[in-house]
Length: 415
Ligand SMILES: [Zn+2]
Image 1 (tube, rainbow, N blue to C red):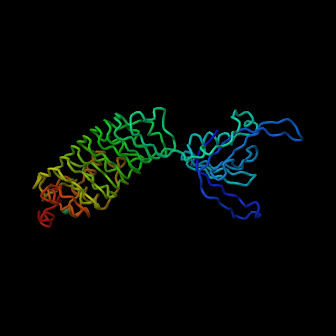
Image 2 (image 1 turned 60 degrees about the horizontal axis):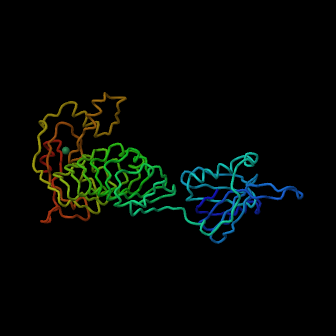
Image 3 (image 1 turned 120 degrees about the horizontal axis):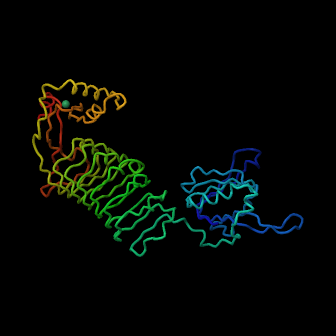
């Protein structure tokens, strides 16, 4: 049983120093950890019997250090075994082995044997220990780049994989086995023919997801919740056929870079401006006619909205007589102003939906049915340090939806 990993050995001097805490550390290095049986002479020249040994080899010490297993493992720390990490403490020599970047499944298997009682260990079938060769001491595979269809791993992926790239190899779906890789953080499947995304993508621990140049027609709500929405920092959906993004898209609360160029989007989700972590945003060459009311909340470093029509202008609709809001509206405004908590447990669900539908006036107050819906002009320099002009003439002003809660605000903002 052989395991490739990174290893740090700490010589516990605690025993030698009469219980002191000092310990000397070696540096972290690539290692091969091998568990197997070795024939040992019995006591007083008795018959030879097989004993379980762990041999740890590094590039500096290929023949390796041997650790007897029977009655010699004092403690195992395996809380992060699913991340390929564990610590094994030995009695003699008094070493702590800090294992990292191992394949989690292989590491689990190895620890399972170490945890057995001496009697159980005797019964374990293991290959005899073979000498370690230099090629055994290699880094666990963390990156895999597939450049042609023929190179695609049919049998599966190393569980230590952190980065996988398969660009332009005619994939028509996202391989579900990739989503089982706990350590995968960077996934680039650009320029393929992927039409839809599986729901289980929501549990992936990805930091970067590149899906540009595919055939996606929708980005499902079901993947806008969960681990992915918490961790993802870069999302590239350029050159697909997305016509709509739901308001749940703004759940991506760590997103720094978002590319939506060359899709079919006519509007952005009303809550788009909730993604305040965004720094780099490009939505060029879509069909946007107006930006959503929350858009001015963004604080970007770079923004590209080139090639959108942006045709909306003026007063869209007058929803109600501004002079006389209903009692329900006034109550709702107060609830929002003082951030009174509410939930379906204390209010009828209809009222909860009503409260959720609040729009924010330019003055910051909430309004519901009594508001003016305006299209204002937003200078994009107000939301981004660097702005690409939206057309050939160099315009950086675009229509943005705005709501006004009162006649006072109408006067104040002078639209
Ligand atoms: Zn107002």
